[in-house]
Amino acid sequence: MASASTPARPRCSWRWLRWPLALLGLVALLLLGPLGVLASGTLDLDTPWHRSSREGTGQAPDPAAEPGAIVLVYGARTVRWRGAFGIHPWIATKRAGAQQYTVWQIVGWRARDGSDALVTGHTLTPDARWYGAWPEQLAEHRGASAEALIDQIEAAALRYPWRHRYALWPGPNSNTFVAWVAREVPGLRLDLPPTAIGKDYLGPATFVAPAPSGTGWQASLWGLAGITLARDEGLELNLLGLSFGIDVDDLALRLPGVGRWPRAGGNAAAR
Image 1: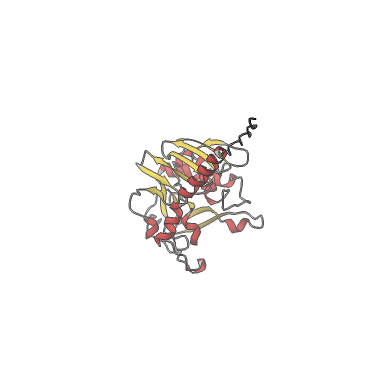
Image 2: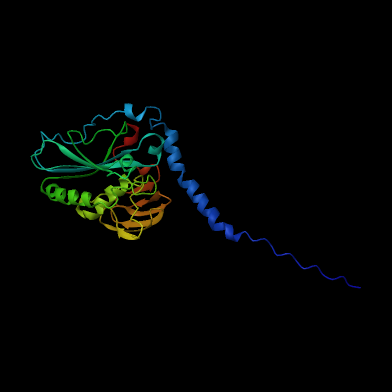
């Protein structure tokens, strides 16, 4: 008498795990950049922020020696371990004949109670260290073109829509502010590095916008995932705020934590 065959058990399929595992693997790979910066010893992890240097670095023209208009954009590693991931940027403007620069930036702690996080101030040293971190110059304009940009920059800064909101990740933050101004003033031609976490935050209901440089376009989901394709930025992908890609214009890679590599003029973070 033939025995009844036992029904074969269905094989357990792991195919549905492939994409989540691939995503986790990519995130882990991208985190090697910030972890490498931490391991490099270039960040000051010990000095309290209130004791860190805020001295000028000699990069900006002396306003007494340069009578013409100037527009400068700087970015420096943020304080302590956060500097392994991102930078804090600011915009400095000087009108023709002015004896000081005006600095425009977002300072996050001011928004904790809903206050205005937009800070403006006057200084002779717009290139000062950001609590010990050496600032990298990201853009420079002089003369008549700079004078024309200043009115646009000031008006755009005052229109910034998230002056009373701040989120370290994924935005809106200080990088969101500078990127927003750059989109409003395409003549600024600002190519923010991949370490400018928050630059891809476009708002809760905006998903496509010009690239900050004004030379292309980007699509972004709340700064958590997106793509930028532009002449100045090249091709850049963003995953959870970690941006990576290739900058054909500058013949460089764009890497999370590291920034542009190789970098012209050496590694400013090591100074």
